[in-house]
Length: 77
Image 1 (cartoon, rainbow, N blue to C red):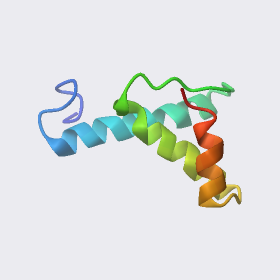
Image 2 (spheres, one colour):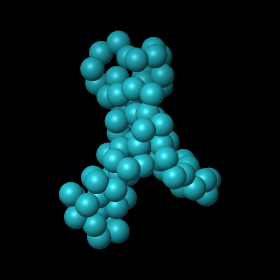
Image 3 (cartoon, rainbow, N blue to C red):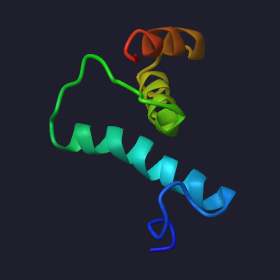
């Protein structure tokens, strides 16, 4: 696949695609496997899309953006 050929990507689109797969896909994989997580450790900015996915999950359950963002901040170190 074009997004797996180089770690951290050769160009912007590849890098963003990698971060989306790892971040969003990582959260979805944990959910699919039934792994409950209290705190997520983000080593650096590469996990940013995981945070977006966590906020989205809360909004989908009826939280406001502000409340979802605040709750997600409590889950990330």
